[in-house]
Image (cartoon, rainbow over all chains, first blue to last red; front, top):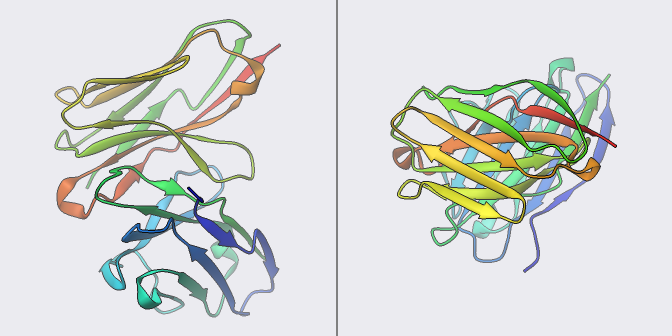
Length: 113
Length: 113
């Protein structure tokens, strides 16, 4: 079974620029999550999708962050404009009703300078 | 809101020693508990998943236990090896939040050869 794919692996941008991250979940996993992990902290949920609908985006800073999951498969997370405090690892995970637990991708490390 | 605490924050042990990592959570009405491993600059690798009806899970040298009534879980690592050096994260989910996982800040383990 292929894992959760994320790209890019690393990204360095200047503040006020925009950036986008891509995630392809495990085939058949209906639920997709985006987490933000700041250095030294545990991951924090940004948004949860069930198929192509949003289940919870209460912790997503909607003035600058947006996410979509077209056709209930791939997902993109965008930041526009980026701030210094957005420097973090952005993790994508997927799960299904059969698996209960999460499978994570390798993450995208974002550095905003 | 679910709060997850991991103690200690960092641990250094000599190779071959058995060790225990601790995780506590404030709301005992959890759905699942999952232990992850994170290597520097990498994503999260699932180690063990304990469903709410279970008390423990074992995989190789790893054993995780769950006591929902006291809000605690432990991860036991037998005969530690230098390759076990990583950050270990505990995460708990609640059924009525779409299986969203709440993470602790992790325990950074160093196994000294």
